[in-house]
Image (cartoon, rainbow, N blue to C red; front, side):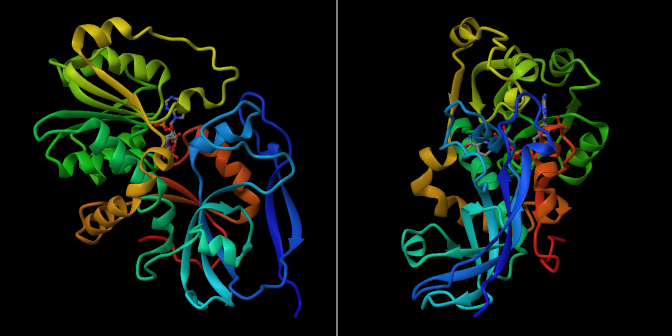
Length: 349
Ligand SMILES: NC(=O)c1ccc[n+]([C@@H]2O[C@H](COP(=O)([O-])OP(=O)(O)OC[C@H]3O[C@@H](n4cnc5c(N)ncnc54)[C@H](OP(=O)(O)O)[C@@H]3O)[C@@H](O)[C@H]2O)c1
């Protein structure tokens, strides 16, 4: 049988400062012959996550760093096109949190036994599994509900509110009966979170003074802050939190393109002590790895009930994965940023 040709996205050099599309390259390769228990999947979508930028550096991060000239990986979804495995048949849709960024992938029997890939419900548009029903949704779900513990009537603030994680955070907070304020970088995103997602209010941090606007929108302070960006936005919100507020450190996008991490910003200890604020970080797979099914079940239910809307920005073609990483860090995406690899893969309505 003729070997399947694939295109792979590799890290061509370690980025310094702002990511450039030249930091990535495409390499051609061929897949090996599938052995008993193996499957081959064609790639449908890759989910582009802002946090993956940290794995491109030399310094250690939340997961093993990418190696130079080797294929990159992130959350991905594929369709089985060849199966020698009893549990998986041609046409099944599979998700992997560490899916190699290539046009088709050979998953071995051992990888399948170890649970590295998971069959998902083919009746749901596949791109949702690299977004609202994937890492992003799970991060929003556990970060907000487990760490933030929002109560009905409380005010929740979320930064990068129109992005992959942020769009889910705000909607879950609405489901829980909270007032939601989203912080975003454009007026178009502001309209999206208010008109499409039903957030109560929003702030464009590039055009408005975040501190002053927050004092107006929540004069007694907000109760929960789900922070995706840190930096100046994080400092401004911290100053506007109430007694016993919860500050969830999910990500720090404002610093990802900076090296080294030398932007010290506000020293928060006094505010934390005086207002009894809890500030906590987390890594979804490390801290909630044994509860992911619980989160997926609830997110799927909300999605099916029409309570979780989902928007995505779609970039076409594996050749444009590098550009997609550049785009997410400069805020070009509204909703989840995905790369469609198989031209016929169905995008979410
Ligand atoms: N802790 C975990 O386990 C975990 C898991 C998954 C994701 N995360 C984190 O969740 C966050 C969101 O990830 P995502 O993949 O869903 O990305 P995203 O929110 O879809 O995209 C990133 C957004 O960050 C905003 N941004 C960029 N530069 C900024 C700056 N200087 N200041 C403020 N905002 C800036 C942009 O929106 P604007 O136009 O609004 O600026 C951009 O759209 C990231 O911090 C990521 O690392 C954490």
